[in-house]
Image 1 (cartoon, rainbow, N blue to C red):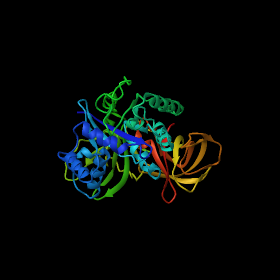
Image 2 (image 1 turned 90 degrees about the vertical axis):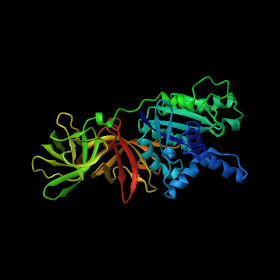
Image 3 (image 1 turned 90 degrees about the horizontal axis):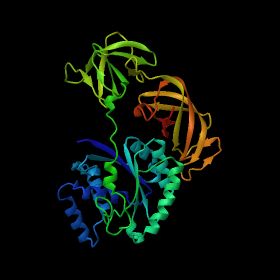
Image 4 (image 1 turned 120 degrees about the horizontal axis):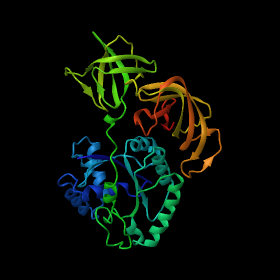
Length: 403
């Protein structure tokens, strides 16, 4: 059965945990006896069952190192399996949110019907746009708190459409829901007979799974070289398939050789390694590869460049000065670069601002110039070589390559 990676984002307290708990419950994806256990605990405390407790309980078990069913991150429909990628909503966890969302194939943006669009709603939606995530469904949650009124949904809907249009996100649906009561999650709501659209699960099932990374162009990032009786170049297949015997080109040097053997612990005669696998290989000719080299097949090789365009999200309380020299890391590559700003936006208001520094939580279109040639690619084509970080003593910014 196919699998789709999903991220759920939105302002803190707009109901992400409750929605996840409800999705697990409505698709019968909870570990056996888990709901009954939580229900009895809630009853003992004199509380109603809150579906947010489902996630809290599962996360607590995970934090304590207890092995539980994969239902903490997975649910199923008749069409496919879903993996929920964690993306913290709190403002200080934006770094993790970017990492989480960059791995997703689709997103749910959640908005509280009572509070409407808030600061983190805008910021998280902008990150989805920045990452080029096209498959988005919006849910207007907590409709029970506004008495399921169509008028309130229409107000929030208008606000959403206006701001999503500004950042070029076209949601496949905007759905009024109550995660707490189960309205329009798996089944149509009797409380909102004025809504004629689809449910959340129906909307998710319309999304497409990305083609396998095995089908993309071959990219291997060298992490280290082990020297025994032979030089074993170790690293990760970022995309495509590594095949024994194939001719390869080493970037940025442009040297050519072929793969004499793929080396894996306790395995012999390995013929290939798939995308995402960490492995090693020996070259036919005596080449001195090093950390940061990118391996491709001739005819479909990447380019090593010293200048490219990108979106970045600044995450440090110490601002970035225009033209400042800073460390850039992409996959296993590392070099010093300078950053020139093209457009700078406040990620809360999305307003364009004219200034020569990037401050905490600013986003910008930039031109990056590197000291050494580096292999980068458009994020929407090969993610692992289209995603990078900027560092001083720690990570200051996350970014994606646009051109």
